[in-house]
Amino acid sequence: MRYKLCGAKVAFTVVFMVIMHVSGYACTTFIVGERDSQLFGRNYDWYFGDGYVIVNKRGVYKAAFKSLLDGENGQPATWTSKFGSVTFNQYGREFPQGGMNEAGLVVESMALSSTKFPAPDSRPYLPNVMLWRQYLLDTCSSVRDVIESDSKVRISYDASKGIGIHLLILDREGNAAIIEFLEGKTVVYTGESLPIRALTNDTYQESLEYWKSGRSPIIDPNGSIERFTTAANLVQNHTTSQSRPSLEQTFDFLYRVTWHGTRWSITYDNRGMKIHLRTDGNARIRTIDVAKFDFSCKTPVKALNINDNLAGDVTHNFQNYDLEANMRLVKTSFGKLGSRLRVSDQVVEFFGKYPQQCKCKE
Image (cartoon, rainbow, N blue to C red; front, side, top):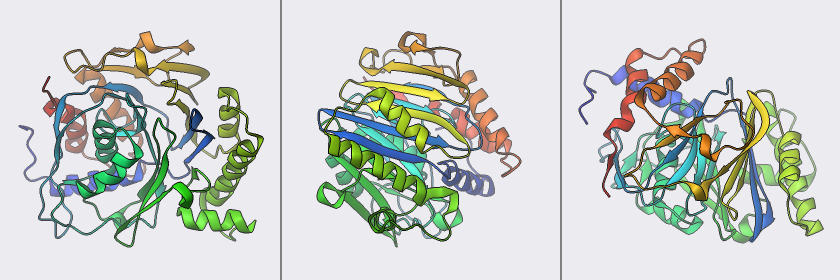
């Protein structure tokens, strides 16, 4: 990587703080249905809704950049993507909010302020959660793979300086898991320990206890428990009805858990390998047929503006990705953060140009 990093400690400390804030404060995820009839719903809530849908390729060599975590003496992770993926990116290619890969693995995350990542150890590290999400989609085909990846890589970041995250993931076989990082340990809920497949912005255990008790907290920042309870009831009632979930029903569930600033509502159908979305910039439902993409890295990366004035199947509306478009997105998004967190031109340039170091190995 030839991009100059020296002398950038202050700038990249800001990068890490930004990364932890961009997961959104009031996001909601849930899974409705079982096994061969499952849909994954996701609301992304933030100050603005700019973004691109990116078609990422398999066979691409990637390298993480250096962490500035105090006490860090490990090495940045390197990997070659095994799977192509479709991701939703607000801060440039390779830094997704979430997405689904060609194996049908869905990875989405929500903000969690009580996050504390494990201390530095001998595992290679990823210096932010966005790059970690892309790593999971690049290298994992199942929930089991994601859980096992914890022995291979770690996140190098002090979440007390920003807002941490937790994940809800789903694979094509219907296996789901929630992953949290609490008190420096990785906590996984799956199988019987995951009775309700929903997640908002409190720990899963705390959310579950409120839901079971029928109580609400006196203080509920951004309605996290309220949204969890609503989603949990919708998911449970649907499970009791034993009917197949429909796209219309899932978008109705997403509507019922909207909060101030819901920008994107996404439904993943990882059995049918399709993604459906609507945004505050375009309320019409658009469909992406993931199975129709060529994920070979010998072909160009594709991208689509998430708010383009389209409807129906938009698979063929994707255009070849280029650096200029990525730089525009990064400048726009970081520019809109400006009133809340000032970001240097050096940081913006780094994010925009980072994908240039990713090399096709096919």
